[in-house]
Length: 336
Image 1 (tube, helix red, strand yellow):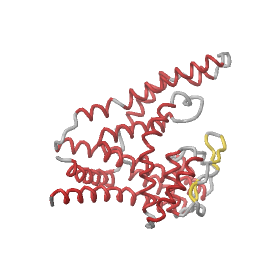
Image 2: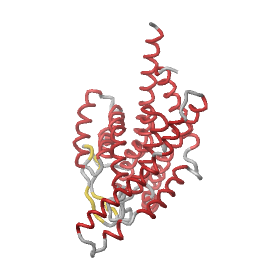
Image 3: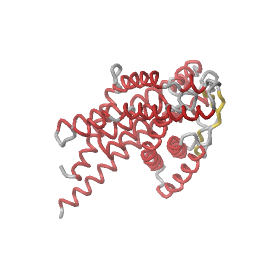
Image 4: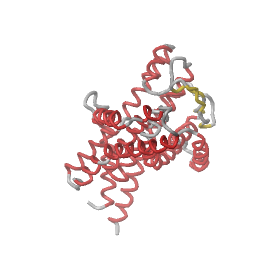
């Protein structure tokens, strides 16, 4: 199978995986990422002694620096031990056979979270629309890490839209992007690193050093797909002459945001939706003010389904581009 035909096949594999996700959703039990998370927790509890050692005031500053470096190395070793074996195995067994193509498609399906993202967002949208704020606060806490106990309807709507735009990249567009770039091995690598970052990437005494490598690894892998996501979001403005301007604004705003990759995606999405994101939120008892993303009005509840629609349109736009390029090149080759 030549590279041109391969591009067409990749597009069809993505469509098949998206269809599986739409019909089946995530596995209710025995999802591979659940098992991966359990294994990650065991390694972390065994090899991470950050909080206990560094909180000891009897340890000299110089010794603390050495200990912090050792903990970083332990975290890096645990991260690599968790995320590299499976992608390497899939890479070694790769072949152009039909069985492998089916396996790749199934792996991509497992990495996707498009339906799950919609379900979580809409289960917040529904009680918000009905005015049931206590129920909405409880459900919002399942989707975001900020304190939701005192959030207003507008703040919950903003938190949900932010989560949809960021996770639209992490759990949908990034997987599709890396499938095109390197097939199932890259999809697995990105998904596992992204999962570890979600578990270990906190800037607190427990994970500040141990999770440092996983967070940086995720930043590196996610950067290219985040740029792709930003472009795809902005293409939905249907004003191509504003694409460069939109990307420039997203880049500027993401420099001030806590996460460069998340800031890129959320700023681009906010521009398309015509809203502003970021602002005050409480994380683990600490009040945090995030940089402004976008340049529009405040988010309202009705923006939640609009953000989901934006993610869906963006991923299918990407698939259409892949299929179109493959088809054009294939026709060009056949006409020679």
